Image 1 (tube, one colour):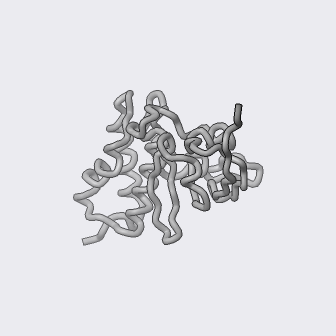
Image 2 (cartoon, one colour; image 1 turned 60 degrees about the vertical axis):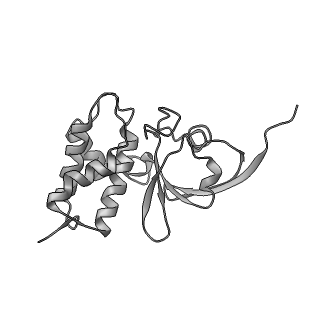
Image 3 (cartoon, rainbow, N blue to C red; image 1 turned 30 degrees about the horizontal axis):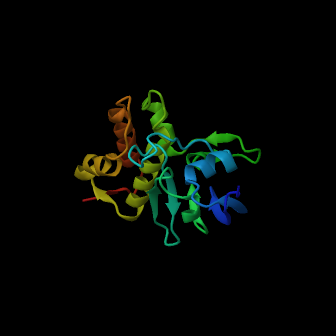
Amino acid sequence: MTGLTTQPLSLTINGKAVGPMAVPEGLMMIDFLHEYLSLTGSRLGCGQGVCRACVVILDHDDGTSEERRTCITGAHFFAGKKVRTVEGHAQRNEKGEVVALSPIQQKFLDHFSFQCGYCTPGFVNGATVLVERLKRQPIARDKVEETITEALDEHICRCTGYVRYYSAVKEVILSTPGLIKES
C-alpha cells in the first residue's frame, strides 16, 4: 500500500505566512483550512460549489479581490496566493481577542441577518468583496439594490434570510463614504 502523495504548500492566510507544509495532492481548500489550520469558519454546505457557504476571499496583487469556492478548489491552487477567511475580518488586540467586528459583520448582527448562520461566512466574504469593489468603482444610488442582488445572488441561504442580509449590506453601502457616486 502506498501513502498519499504530498506537495509543499505555502500561502498567506489572513495576513500571516503559512507553510511550507506537506499537503496531499487533490486536497480541497476547505479541508486544508479545517484540518490543517483549524480555521473552521468557512462551511462545507453542498460540496459542489453551488451554495457558496465555503467561499474565501482571494486577494490579488493589484488590490482587487474575488470570492473563491473552497469545496471545489484544491488547496494547491492557492500556492503563493493571499487568502482571507471569515476569521480574518474582525479587528483583534495583541492577545488575539476580537475588539471590533468588520462593518459587514456588525451590520449582519444589527439586522439579525442570519437564522442558523451556516451560510453567513460566505455572505460575509461575498459582501466584503462587493464593498471593496465599490471603493474602487462607486455606483449610482439607484443601482444599490441591483448591485447587491448581482453580487450575492448565487449565495444560498436555506433559512431564507436574504432580505436581512441584503438590507444589512445596503446599509453598509449607503453609510460608507465613497461607495456611492455623488450626482
